[in-house]
Length: 349
Ligand SMILES: [Zn+2]
Ligand SMILES: [Zn+2]
Image (cartoon, rainbow, N blue to C red):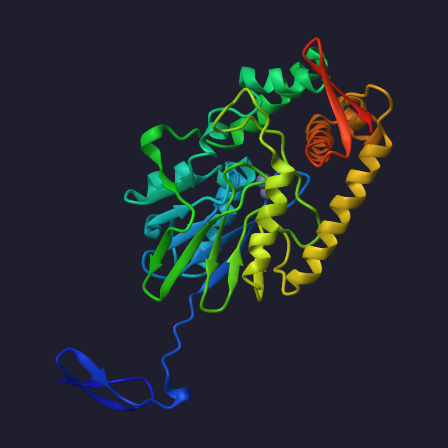
């Protein structure tokens, strides 16, 4: 059998083997088309990046929040690339925050046969972040008064309307190291926890491009969000320690291009990596400097971000940040922690 290849060369298949010499410039160029679409969100962080991979099977990585504005923007931006919701075959979610996953079910329902993929450590979020008793227990342990938790929980109820819950049969689990196959190659799934326990990134090895949700962002250091441990929900997930491991793992691939969940793409990951590590180190030192003889994480959050406490989302992020840094400092034996009447008190060593 004779076959024509890019570059005009001919080869002969003999016993199923193609014996050809190709000029280097004649090699077929199969570049995966990763198209960022900026979708509005009602959150302080601003627009979210959705990634259209216009290959077979047509795939969206993240979809945006469940608001009419986001649905309209997604529809229009896809249309400008000749794509409609009904063409989507696969919806892959980096993590289960409302700004990223809210429209998943709506797009899936319109696309009929589309599959939704998400790490199953994220699905707890889809059934109600802050709605669970474990969250209240973890907050109490960090010294957060019940009245403050109640206020944050009430606000969360309105945020949770920005996504649909996914039931067990609604999604397939993403697993570390699995490959998402496309016509032009594949994306390797990397479980990169920290921002949330089930956050995933997607590596295109051919050109070392990574799509990483909120794991790496150009202009902000992602928040290690307080979360119950997916394996033992009575315990806190060690979000900052896991986040640092994830950052190091991404660095090990020496990425040339990193597509984050918000803002512009990153071409200088090494620079960002060092900036993050410095920022985390500085924040940890500041948290340690704010503890006296018996200080809760909530006390530190109030001192660290005195202005954040009039706004419930910021308050939750401030509390998460303080807990993550103190937890990590205690694990590194830089501070001591003692439990008294169900509350953790930190003190300097
Ligand atoms: Zn997020
Ligand atoms: Zn986000």
